[in-house]
Length: 73
Image (cartoon, rainbow, N blue to C red; front, side):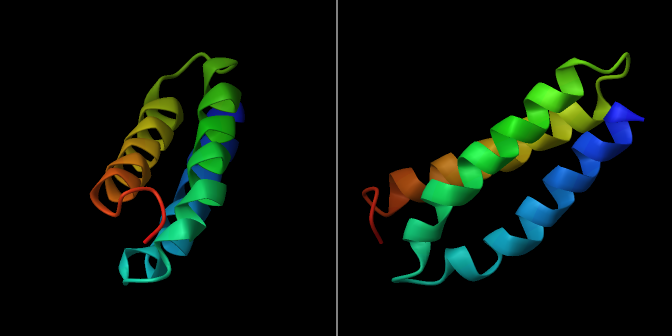
């Protein structure tokens, strides 16, 4: 059950990251990356790895986007 909840958090975070790829909206990733990491923490309490891995990939994508924009853009 926690794996499904973790995957759901990751999916919601990924959907919210779609506008964050546009210029001047990249600062939204400062909220979404920790949200994905919370999903990964929830996934760590599960016996499966799927939700945790998905949340870590989403967090890595958001962190990469922050890196490309210099942290603000």
